[in-house]
Length: 310
Image 1 (cartoon, rainbow, N blue to C red):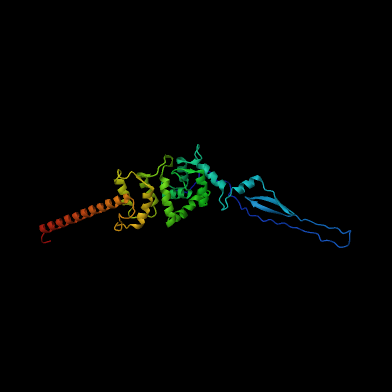
Image 2 (tube, helix red, strand yellow):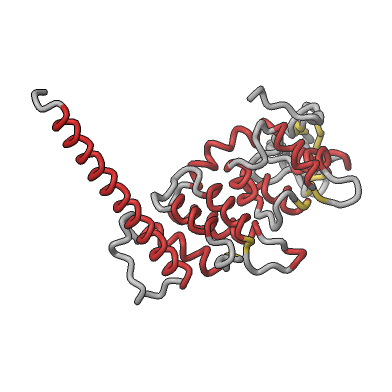
């Protein structure tokens, strides 16, 4: 895809450093000798230090015993808007406003499409699922303000180029065993219609999400499992959370030939049906292959009888 561009203008510059050194010089006069008429003098040497903030010098005057910084209200606001890790909360908020819905304080479907377009990603690809996971989004095609702000802080990015630069790191993180387990379980909740109070995934949604979440590492049995779900629409109306979670364990512990699967173990009943269906499918496939081989052998014999000298 083309170069990532954003449709909103970034602030003229990122926030500067909050560091500054303060120096105070003090000079005390020495007590003079000479009786009752002697005088005690003290001098206070005043010095100032400059704090550099976004190209602006902020003067601080140090007097004896106290420091009185002459910091403007605008500077204080900008300093408070900078996260401790260097991410600008003001820039994140401005980025959110670029895609925010006109009537709701959230990025909805239209804004999400523009956001993904600026990120140079397809809304239906794995990168977007991983980003939604890091943002802890509660609903597909929607980012609330809190989800967006907290998510950008979590991945340490406050601009479109910044988010783009994090994708490779996020994809690598998602391949870790514990991280993927968390992503996998998040995906189930992500697919539910929270407004409708759904507790199980629609079969078609579950099939699409299984394909999506296993994009980088596809289990050998995945396509057979999805074929089984597609070919049995009446028997499989929805996917429960328990079935979804246990399928990950199934792919990790059951071999491709299904020989170590046992109905005596605590698998969901749907898995029993799948193993039975897949075993029968393989039996028919093997029977067809044997029949084809036998038919091929008979053809060879007939050819040899027609041309005995060949």
